Image (tube, rainbow, N blue to C red; front, side, top):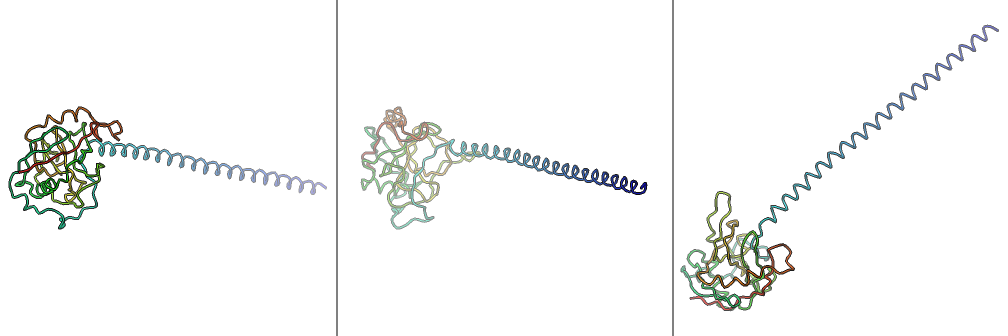
Length: 265
C-alpha cells in the first residue's frame, strides 16, 4: 500500500514537473514569437522611415529640377524632328550674297529699320530674305511675348501657335554671341535671332526680337539687328502678356501683334 502511494506521488510529481516544463516551453515559444514580431515591426518601421526620407528627397530633388528647368524661358519653335542636314527645300546660303542687307520691317504700326547679316549668318539670312520676298511673313502674328527673365517678342509662325513653320528646318547655328565663363551669353537689345526647338538644325521661320538685354545659352543664330524704331514696340511690351498665359510674363501678347511688310535691299 505504501509502495503504491509512493508510486502515485512520484507519478504526480513527475506529472507536475512535466506540466511545468511544458508551460515553460510554451512561455519560451511565446517569447520568441513576440521577439520575432517586434523585430518585424521594427524592420517595417525602419523601412518606412527610410522610404519616407528617400521619398522626401526625391520630391525635393524633383522640385529643384522643375525650378531649374522653368526658371528661364527660352525662345522655341516646335517643328518635326530635325535631320542634321539641309534639304533641297532650304534656300541656298549663296542667296545672302555674303553681305549686310538693309531695309525695314513693320510690326503693327511700328517701322523697324533692320540689317540682315548675310556675311555672318548666310544660311539664316538667305532663309529670312527668301521668305520675306515671298510675302510669307505678311500678316503673320507675333505669338509670344516674354517680360520676365528674358525680354523677347517672338514672331514668324504662320499658325500663330508656336508650332508652325515654312515646311522645312535648317541649320547650323550661326553667329551666336560669345559665351561667358558660366556658359551663357548676352543677346543684346535690338538683336534678331532665330528661334529653334533645341537642335542646331531646327531653325525654321520663327525668330525673336530682343527688346532688352537677355541672358540665354549661345544656341540661337543672330542673323540681324534693329538699327532704329525699337521704341515703336513699347505699346506692345507695356500691354504685357494676355491673361490666359500659362506662366507669368510669358505668353501671347495682350495687344494683338502682327508682322507687316518687310523690305530688304
